[in-house]
Image (cartoon, rainbow, N blue to C red; front, side, top):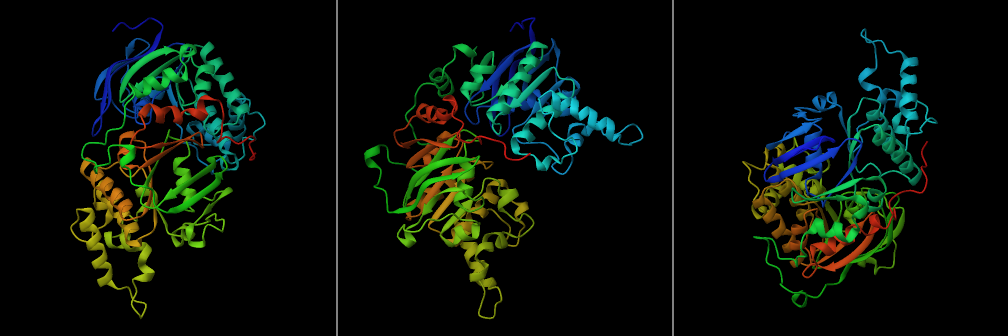
Length: 528
């Protein structure tokens, strides 16, 4: 394919494969002085493409050209040496260091290693001024800033270095409207100076405001590149979803009823939410969860799905609205301030980050499964009943098909799928009425995913109330009886999983982004 002379970056036939193909034959061009938006559903390949351009991953096939020459960065350092820099959605700052130290981290001292504080502050003030952050004290610890200003400091840190190509991944997710205005002024200045910008966002109103062109990825394939001003939300959803598809259960998934009429009637209400919210994450969530059903939660990454589950579980505290439970006849209003309170009320959470938040990796399988039940597994003398632990854990491991040498084996010796099963086994041992699953199939092989899906359906068949967050539309629909969609922290739709189309879910996912309603964004920055 011919590369136009205005091209700053071009990818040709770019492929990337992990366990399965993630990018397939991507031809993408970024021009000098262009802001090019990259859009697509969760898992479409946006981050993978940008990670290859930024030197984090290497392609499995195809080629890249930068300013007409071969470009093959083997690391982030290689990419930055070529003038390619990326600001990720997750902050990459040192909270205990000052703003100045973060901004100038790679050039803190001279050749003798001596830090000149006066020079450091001067360079920091110059970097901050680019984003109209002159009011910030360079000596202030980054941890003292609100999330929005931390995001701007991160952007200022990147722009303090020479840049030809800038990648921004959801840069406005934590920003207030005035801060977004500051960022867009800087992006316009970069465009005028010939810098190319790849801009990942779900907010259509921002895309139309700042971008020149938009490329849409679907299932690892670049399906269209169009002028931003000519692309509306209906066209975007069509490109992202393809032809409207009525849901067909995933191959190998637990068989589901094939029509809305065959769906069993919902059981008794197990939990009720009333105007439930957590500032900066989600707001005004009203819904009922029933026994014997799987409620799926869809939405784009960052829409507030994980945050909602964490607030239900007491890992984070809600600050508005209430939960009501059948144990007290729904007469009392609850907000859990700790997981202990939620567990006592019959709620368990299988977290998304099993390694960082769910498991004690260096401890045994038996310890991890029985962790929440140890107080009930003591004998009359207060000694742990090893026989009861072994009996319970063996039974659960057999049921879940956990491949292990013994129950004494450390969890970090297991595969990712078997680690996930151990985490699930912990909550099965608790036998709680409500079980929340956050991305239950992430990072596990196909066989383990199938067993986990079967287990979730079995829990519902036993009368449990189950909630599943999944970024995989096929998995979400294969598991769920009912699906709600969060958009920018707000409830944007509720659907029957047997009849909803992927296009329906995407349209709802964009609802409170495309209308310019920032349901999750605080009106003011309360921290310095």
